Image (cartoon, rainbow, N blue to C red; front, side, top):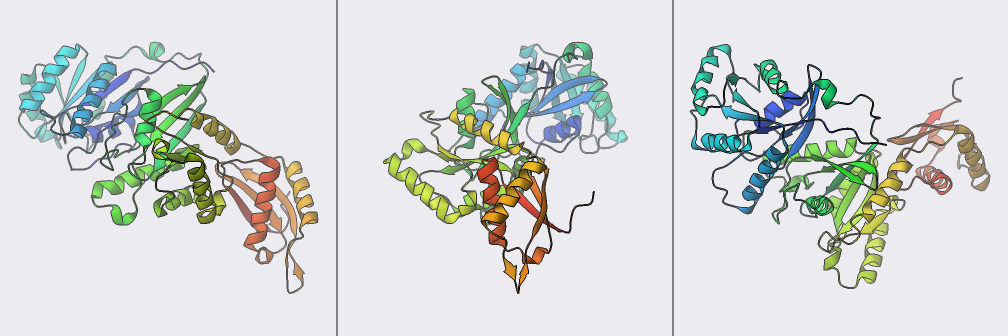
Length: 448
C-alpha cells in the first residue's frame, strides 16, 4: 500500500522540569509520556499524534535543555533535542511562569532564533487566573505573545493549540484524503536492562534515534518509531528494561516498567531479547511468562552473539536450556543477533512477519471440528470414575489473543495434559508459530 503523507511535526522544548511532558500528554489527549517531579525523566524523542480544529499533526516531547552537559547521557539527550527541533515545523517553547527568566531560557531562545521556525511561547505553571499577569515578564524573551497555561490543570491549552495550528498548513494540505490506510505491524522490543534493545533499533535505523549507554536503565519510556523495510510498515516500540521488583530503586522506574508492560499489550509481536552470554535468566522467564499470560505473539532473540566463541555449541546449549526451563515456548521461533557486527539484524523482520501473520490467522469451524474428530480417534479424552470426557464442538472465537472454545460435557473431566495435547494438535495442523493459544472450556452445546 502507498504511504500516507506524514503529518507536520510540533516539537516541545525547554529546560528540565518546566512541564513539557505534562503539556505533551495534554496536547495528544493521552497519558503517554512519563511525568515526574525528578529532573531528566524524558531522555529520548517521544512522539504522539494530536488533532485540533481539523488539523492533524504529530507532537514530539524532548528531554530538558541544559547549559553544560557533563556526562555522556546528558550530551546524547541534547543531541536528541537538536534532532527534534531540526525535524519540527512549529516549536512550542515552555518556560516556568513561577520563576524568573533564566540564563538557560535565554540560551534556548537564541537557539530558536537561529532555527528560524515559528515559535509559540508557553508560560506554564500559572495554575489560576490570578497568576496570568506573570506572563508579561516573558515578553522580554522577544518571542512575541506569551501564552499563559497550566498543563497540570488544563488551563489555557485551547488558546495555545489555536496558536500552534495557526502556523500549520490547512487541513486539506496536511492530510490527503485519497490515500489508503497503511497496514502497520507494531513490534515491542522488550527485555531486561542493557540487553541491547535500543542498540538494535539504532543499528537498523542507522541513526542514534534512542539513547544508548552502558549504564542500565538509560531508556525510561516506551518510544514509538516508524520504520519501513521491504515495502512493509512497522511501528517499533523501544521499551525500558524490565527489572525484577527487587531491582527497582527509584519511583520513576515503576512508571517505566508500567509503560513497558503496556507497550507489550498493544504490540502485534514482541521481540524478546536475551543475552546469549548469560543464558535465560529468571527475569527473562518472567517477561516471556507475561507475554504468554496476555496471549502476545513473540520472537525470541539471543543478543551479543559477537561475544560468543564456539557458536554452534553455544546455540545448542541455549536451545537445551530454553527447552528445559520453558518447554511451553517450543513453538516460539528464536534467532541469534549482534548489533555490533549487524549479523541477522534484518532477519528479525522475516520472523516478525511470519509470527504477525500467524497472530491474525483464523481457522474455520468446519476445519477445526474435523481435526477434533481426528484427535478423539487418535487419543480418547480421559475418564474419571467411569465418566468419559467428551468434546462436543469447537470454534475459534478470537485473535490477539488467539482463543478457541471447546464445548464439553463436564469441564472437571479434562486434565491439563489433555488440553496441552489438543493445543499441540492444533499447532501441528494449522501452525500458529510464535502465538500463544488459549483454550476455554464451556459445558453444553453452543446455542444456535
